[in-house]
Length: 129
Image (cartoon, rainbow, N blue to C red; front, side, top):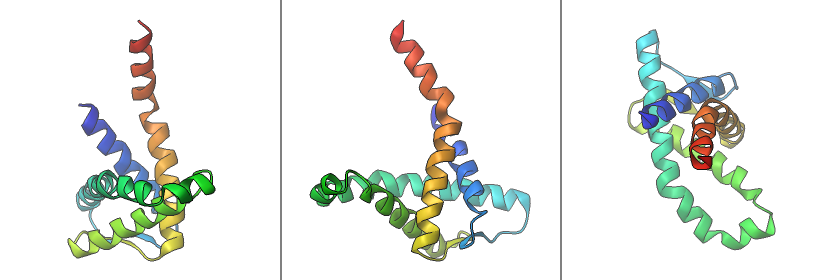
């Protein structure tokens, strides 16, 4: 159940990110939009699961030298890449450039964190027992 909640929170975060110019949800009907958002959320999660650890290992020195700020760039690139993959999979979602991906990834991270905060607090409360 927690997985479903996280996917829905990510889908809502991607929807919020579509307020930015350059991040476009291209489907028409409401059910199609919801399906696209869920698909993009799962896709972004898979891209992060597979590529982010590789980027962290390959760029370990850069992460240290920039005090982790390069992570923002990496997240932006991964979000941009997710938009490209979505297009290849015929999902009506696009991220038109690096800066749209950069700021979109920041919005997705913040909104996802806020929406999943109750899960984190519940886990913390269970650990203290």
